[in-house]
Image (cartoon, rainbow, N blue to C red; front, side, top):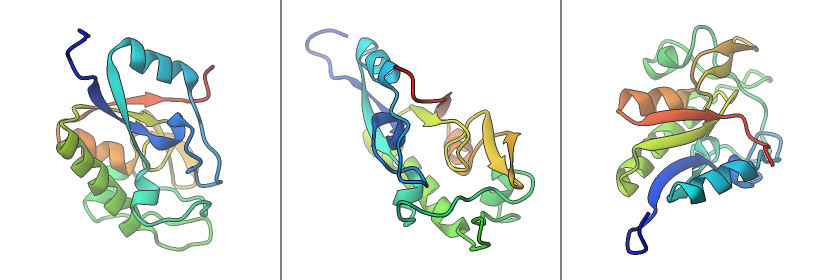
Length: 156
């Protein structure tokens, strides 16, 4: 990056940047990710889809019901909490908010937290278990041409 150029904006799960926005009120701060962003001339745009969607912190754990995020986006499945509350609309609002944030900032890359029903890239929670596949936000971003990379978090 030259001295006159602006850092490239990248959408990043807020919990990876130390925001205590996980369902349990904790974070997954990843110091290695922060260093990598700086080295690559990238500027983190923090975003938590679940908070953006209107879910508080802390909040009950949730998962994708059934086959996966594509079915949620297509209206065939829902996202329940462990107490059975339907939080599908909050997950959809959060995913749409992430996409709008990408459009607003000209973002083409998102670094999102693995194993989240919103942000998971390779693994997410569906049917009450950890399964292969993306979360709701990742699925929507990919459908709209945003590259999404999963980050496990908590690296020093």
